[in-house]
Image (cartoon, rainbow, N blue to C red; front, side, top):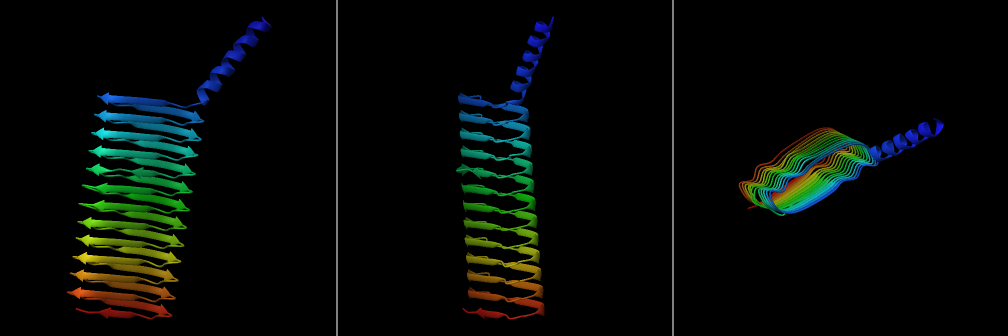
Length: 294
């Protein structure tokens, strides 16, 4: 009887170990691809590679050393990852046709990297707490991008190269940073950061440029450089070590910098076409230089 109980205990222990030792690898090559992975607890990993046609993939992992990597190569790409807690990570790499990706990671060592190539790009990342980071690269066609990160060591970098660009980042607290660079077509970019060591830089090179960076408290800085077409840039920073610089090179220029309190500075430099500029700084070490030309 003891032997039977012992054997049953060993089996149950082994089953429990297997139930916790998650991993999953799926590799599909051509036509109706699709994949769906759900893993619940402990050493979660997951890796999906799909090659051609109706790609799609979805991974949900709930707790412990999450991971996930999805590579999709051609046609109706789509991907989605939700990871809930501990070692989060995620990489999605999509190359051609109707790309889309959606990553949500909620707690501890978040990181995400989405990297696409061409067609109807779009990406959306939400990370909520601890070592947030994010990096989105999209190259050509209908780009768009959104990153929301809520707390601790935030950072986000987005690079989009051509056509209907838009990008946006909202980070709420700790070591914020955001860099967005877009090269051509209907650019726009937004970065809103609320508290701690803020910094933002948005560089857009040609076509419908816009801008905006609103930062509320601590190490503020913000630079926006936009070179050609319908430029506009707005910074609005609220408190501490403010500095804001706008440099725009040619076409519909307009710039507005408004900073509220602490070591303000500002610089606006616009070179060709319909300049305008308003700067409004309220308290402590104000300074402003505006230089417009034609």
